[in-house]
Length: 435
Image 1 (tube, rainbow, N blue to C red):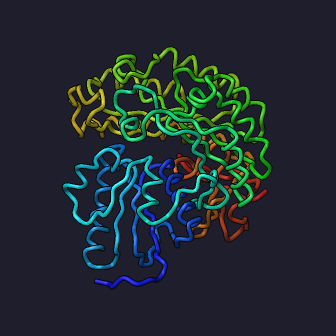
Image 2 (image 1 turned 90 degrees about the vertical axis):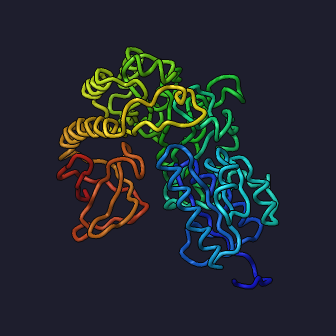
Image 3 (image 1 turned 135 degrees about the vertical axis):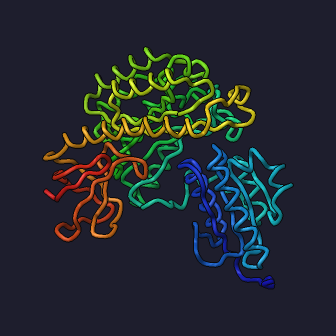
């Protein structure tokens, strides 16, 4: 066992799960740095303290979090680290189980326990650090969490159990945070929340997402603003007016729909029907004709029949979404859907997922082929092998299509924009050359 010394402690923060967790880790690291504590993100170097920011959303994510905790618990047992701290969604939801089942964890905190976590490390929570954080993404783009928690009653979702009720961040604080990010080189701002369209109802007694987006557009240095996780029921149409008017706002909308069968939508407690969903999507596309719509669906929800599944396939074929993700249903304790019989077996869930994604692959390929010969403003994220890899305004990092440019024949600087002429296309990738 390594003996303790008086040297400055080094903290390694490990982040699991979604982009909301990324922001939480960045804020934690900003607080630690302000307290003059050395901190790194997912470092390979040895650290005295490891903080794991966990995910507890669905089974696969929970298992990854548990496996990561067990790994570092063994590292502690070997004397390679001195202290193991667990925070985030999994520990918010399963603290008693973690305390009972896993030895070696020194402290367990929930999703809103940052001041307590800092106190454990002898650090103070500095309220004056509005939005100050250590960005872990490439410096040219950053996630902006505009609210915390969720008030929606979706039957399958455990987020309210882990994140609590909806709490909006004030517009002035978000504008200040955006200015700080822009000063450090951020060019693309990705707005995230559990439900971005609910923004402002708690603070201002009305939906204020459109006003927030207008204010963020005034920040110099920000060139793209991208909207994620918009709830379809009660969607604020004035957001589309701002998107149409402001060049900085990407013609892109992430709007998780989850299903298209009225039977499933009712059981999921989504507050919307198939017809109302189609009417909303028609409105979106009429106001923003060149918009890229990203959505997600759940395969194998309790009671989903083959007819429900076929309804969803036909819906995909009819709506021709630019971007789609599909997840198999996860039976989560203490959710409303947990009272239902999880009667779709895993093999059927996966088959239905594969069928949906095959339909979407064909749709995506057809859409991409129409882009050949056209020119797109592209933001480059990285160089990988023989290619510079970037994205158009119709693509979000990590989840959407990419533009590949041959590095042997072209040179672009990572973090910069360039106009790219598309020369060929595949289902999920575009290839191009500098104009």
